[in-house]
Image 1 (cartoon, rainbow, N blue to C red):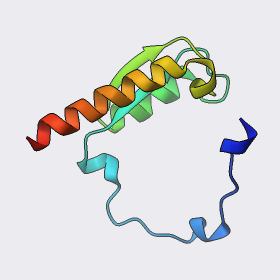
Image 2 (image 1 turned 120 degrees about the horizontal axis):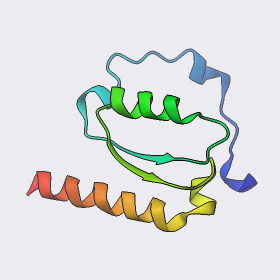
Image 3 (image 1 turned 180 degrees about the vertical axis):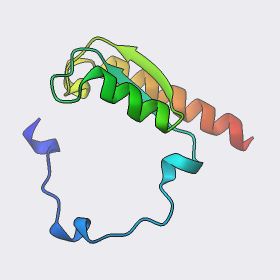
Image 4 (image 1 turned 60 degrees about the vertical axis):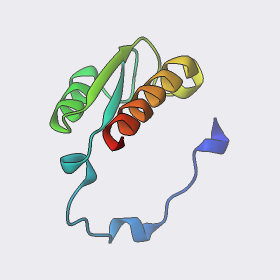
Length: 87
């Protein structure tokens, strides 16, 4: 898991965003019920604010480690929706 946690640069704090992608593009959110870092109400707020399609599963904050099957499933769902929208 440590290999996936890469440092980010201070320059990221100076960036400006004119239009957040979540306001105009379809999004998907994997809500994890056993997350000890982001409380469930916070996850619900963020996913609803983004208008995301939500899948809810039991799993930890490191969901890609605890439930890779759920991560793969939502990626497939998002890819299928994106493909359908372009054809």
